[in-house]
Every structure is written in C-alpha cells, then in structure tokens.
Image (tube, rainbow, N blue to C red; front, top):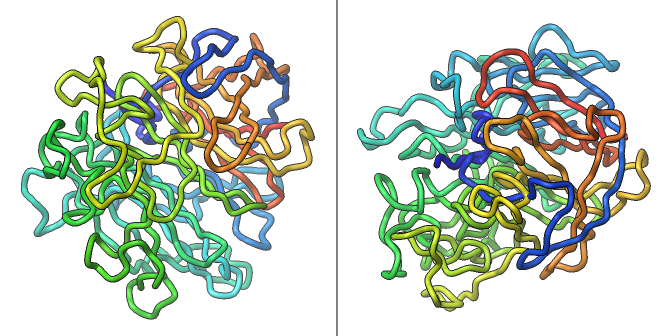
Length: 451
C-alpha cells in the first residue's frame, strides 16, 4: 500500500504514507485520544477551479490570501476573488508531476516578516535531479528566495531566484514541505525521511539502532532528512545557523537540525498566541501522530511509530520492546495526538494519512478558540472523504482529546474532498484545502474558510 502524505493530495504531499482516522462519525478510543462529541460548523467557499491547492498563507499587514497550487503556481485571492494571473509561476522549474498519487511539486511558501518593505519570500519546490546528485536519486528539493516588486508587492519577479538550499531526495515521496517563520525571526523547514517505506532502501543510511534497517530519521550526521530545520536567512550569506540550534557546534549533528526522528512532517504550524510548533507526521501503516515540536527533541522514527515499537522487517507487527532514548541519550518524545490508520484498523481508525493543521485563533467560531484543528486525507480508500477534528490543547506533553467536526452546509455534513492541507490568515481564521482527485490533475481544487 502506498503511503503518502496525501496519496492524492496529491502530490500535495500528504502521502498515503500515513496513518489513521475513523471511518465512522464517532471517533474511537485510541492510545492517546478519544471523544464522541461533534461540533457542527459552516464552510465558506473562498476559491475554486484550482488543481491541487496545498497551502494558504497571508503576509503581515496584507489583505491578500496566497494559495499554493502543487502544479507550480502561487495564486492570489484579492477582494474576495481569485485573481486570473498567478503571483508566481514555477511550472517550468518543477519536476513533471504524475496525474495519480504525487507528493512532489510546489509545496511550501513563507513570506518574510518584513515582506511589505523588503519584498522577500521563500518557496519550496521539487526540481529535476541536479547535476552532481547521486545518479540513483529521484529529484532535488529546492528552498529559494524570490522578491516581489511594486509599491504593494503586486507581482513576484521570476528572475529574482536566489537558491538558499538544495536537498537531494532519493525517492519521490516523503518530501515534507512546510516553510514558516517563527516568532524568533528564523525560518523553519520540514523534511521527510527520503521516501520509500519503513525508512529503508536507496538513500536511507544506517543508523545507531541495529534492530531495524535504516534510517534517516535517526541519523543526524549524514543528511538532513527526517528533520525540522531552523536557519537564519538574514545573515548575509545564503543562510546562517542560530547559535542555539541543538547541533550548532557541528560536533554531534548537522548544524541546521532543530528536531528529528520524523517520517514525513508534511505540515506543521506555529500557534499565533503561544508560539507552540505542532506538526502532523505521517505514519507507516498503523498509527498517525501529531507532535509538539521542541528544540533538540527526537520523535522516534524509525525506532518507533507513534508510541509503538516499529518493526522495519514486518511493519504491521510491532516489536515487543525498543529503546526509550537514542544514542546521544535524548529520550524519545511521544505524540500529543495518536490515532489508528483505518487501512489497518477499519473499524477503529480515523482515516488514512494524518494532516497537520492550526490552532484556531479566529473570531468566526468562538467554540473552536484555542483548539488545534487537524485532519485525515480521506476516511475511505479511493473516495474523496477527508475529515477534520478539533483537539483541546492541554500542555506540551498531551494527550489531547479530540472531536470530529461536521459541516452543516455541506452534503451529508461531510467535507466531501480529499483533505490536502490547512491554511491560516492573520486574524487566526482557518482554511481547508482539498480536491476530488487522487493526484494533481483536473480543476476540482477548492479552498474553504471555517465559519
């Protein structure tokens, strides 16, 4: 079974490589979450006629919404209307995308905190394999800076690209893809473990845990994969290293790494009020997880899948025991939300592929204030049936209880699309992005705001 944080997500990157969410309206008790109550909310259509919308964001002091379409375009919603011309067109730079499940493409966008004055913004996209990369690798991820011109920064300059970082990717899946500035002014970047399955195969190094083959999640010295990075893009060079990064001295690990032990943290967010970083990490076949990301923390992959001891040789049958810390003495951090994947647990799972979202800080639905919204790509294999859940944030260690959201102005109270991603604007409102295809094809992509 393919797992990609969005099998269809399409390329959006939600690879079908994750884990669970209930296929019924009622969530069932799992290792860390349960709750039968349901909130009924409304959805307002914000944009349509997109292919595969995978991210939405808004620059500071700007009324426009910016939507990433996985096929290579940054689109703009201005005065309530999707503008006909893209803000930036990168279709010629990205790899040729498959019309079926696809996790590559244009995946990340972050505006500099001073975008209004300096016009700087950053993108993450999947390019053809660069010269000098290993011949048996699949493609190269590019993190690049662009600038926008005009008094109101109306248009990006397509010739202004300045590459910040290249990351050669051995497989086509597990690319992660979020870029986000923290309140500290640094740029955070999520990277998957390099793809394939079980953190093994081409491009997956050997680590300290010999009971399992692989893998990049536990390696911090040979590559950046399976990690969340933190860099300083205001240093004057391509980028600098914050002095308090866990391995800033370069002795025990690569300087860019902020947290590690992750499989495919496709979407993470930073709470507007508390600064808490929360990432959804796609599981292998049994469990999906949401994690509070802390500096220097190790989230266990591929020693563990969620709170379970992972077995790379037989991924449906966990090992009876495993270490509780890595070779550096860092204890594994458990997820704050863990749930079963409905492919392996048809009656108990919440769905297929967990998708990380945002802490709601808006005004349109008071009952959600301070709740973390997350979802699943779909509840049923082969059907556009994503689901959204709300979890009451209760400390950094969890567990967080969750409940399912129903949509009173949608057929059957259901979302009715593959859930590709979430977005959030400056006022804290949360958006749902989806389409009806299992890949970046057609024009069924839509963006909704929770009302």
